[in-house]
Picture (cartoon, one colour):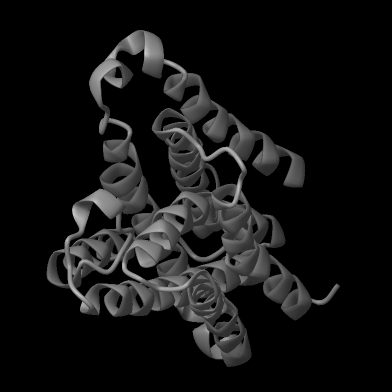
Length: 251
């Protein structure tokens, strides 16, 4: 498969396929409990952090010309400012009491976020194929719990199931657009690859530490007791080990 083919395929896995996976989980005959959802989030947090420190930053340092630490900080600041000004990224249903504009903001924010994810995936592939694969899987891991939350929120705002599915698939597909556009720019973006990978690393750190991990501390009653939440620890570590093992195998 050509490099462009790999980028398109894995961008699809990281965006549209992850949404379809989330949709399948939402449509289960027996819905997930809050505790089970937190296990999914635990795994995603471990995957994101390990993708940063085992894949994105080492690849940037070794093959892309060095880690652009300013770009890492820029990725963190970008998501922080986005959340503070527009509340666009990674919404959780219990945090929102917005009116009719809320679904539109969610959709616009998700589309921009997915576009940037596609750019990050393509940038990683243009440095090294293994880096691209790990980045795409990290995107998919954090998109699944995100899409589950957004799907439920949009339905609660009165959107039909069909409309919610169609709009979210279209939003997820913006990842493919971002990936293809970056690839089409070719040599013109080569000098920016370490910056793009570092920016993606900053985003992943922010998503894991600001969105996912704090969510693990949102418990109710008996859920807060260690005996009922300790499974989050090995699942979080499992996410780290899966990426570590995948990086070793791909190398």
